[in-house]
Image 1 (cartoon, chains in turn blue, green):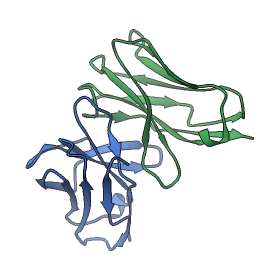
Image 2 (cartoon, rainbow over the protein chains, first blue to last red; image 1 turned 120 degrees about the vertical axis):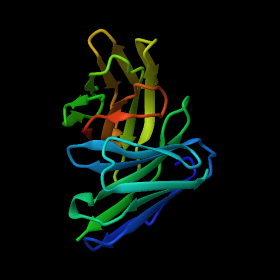
Image 3 (cartoon, each protein chain N blue to C red; image 1 turned 180 degrees about the vertical axis):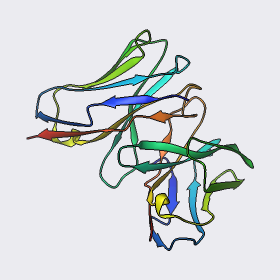
Image 4 (tube, chains in turn green, purple; image 1 turned 90 degrees about the vertical axis):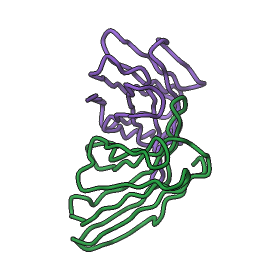
Length: 111
Length: 113
């Protein structure tokens, strides 16, 4: 998994509560990404980062925010979780000239 | 933005037969097309990729073909084995590399022993 660790691996939370997912990489890759995976939708990009403190929105960014204070860490925050955010979240890393390397995923359930 | 369509959604083949998965894309600027394999409970892993300056690429039992004019690309797996059973995703990138990948909806391949 190219040195990518996602935490937690599983989480159940209540509607309206804030949730933060963490992605840690040891590859020193410049780019980091957060995707969500839902049946019938494949993987969809939420946010990405192209450097420390440099982030941008992806295809499905509403309701999510991200931060990257260090090269190795990329945080995804759901400010107020909703049931529609129940999903499997994948972090990925890479460079312009390489493939995307994916972590093991975090299964989030919002009840 | 880019729109990637993938077919079929499920595919069952007998061990030893070939499997073909097809994808189409909409953005003519896309120039990088990776294929990912995802096993149960794991993250996707790259199995093969192709760039727009190449029409075909092969790696042992796996090959990918690209038709830029028609905007479609295909994954071919020959001599399938039970361990090939997984979900396969195609993707397209208008910016190249890992940046800004748009994924298809996946194909669940089952290889029957």
